[in-house]
Length: 210
Image (cartoon, rainbow, N blue to C red; front, side, top):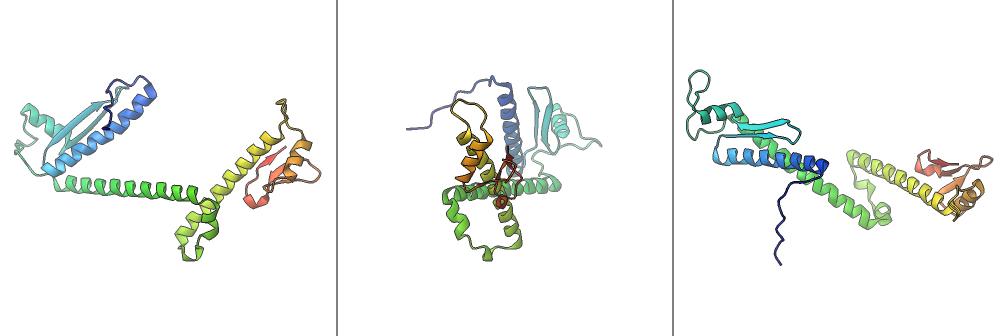
């Protein structure tokens, strides 16, 4: 079964329309840049956003392309030659832009794959990870990931605490019900004399529930 054709029509939601404009505008300028590099074309693109802001892209510039279209000479009386090659500086900037865009896409894919691996492996990933083979930068990223995981675990534990300790009537949980639940939960500990329940200090975060 072939891909269904998506109907092209105005996006009614204003926020979604603005997001779509930003994404499509970047894609349009990128395609114009590629066409200029591949074919040596001189290009001018002018776009007005739904809010009235103007955006433009041109090679060698929007002004020179418009002047050529209108038959006006460049400053100094120079005539734009047909099929003139791109300026070296512009060509180099476009090459750098393309390289950075490709590197960004590669890094995004690496991050997505890493997140999938972490999610699929769960606790086995952390237990079996060989930290001896990690460099300083990798260890720092790993430490930050562990801290983020601790934070997420702490927040999740507190949410479960509230849900489990809240009476069926929907009223607020009592200190006694919190303490009883904490005694059965390895992630939580009750502070003596105050009735306050905390996530264990091993998390490294000052989460506490009264």
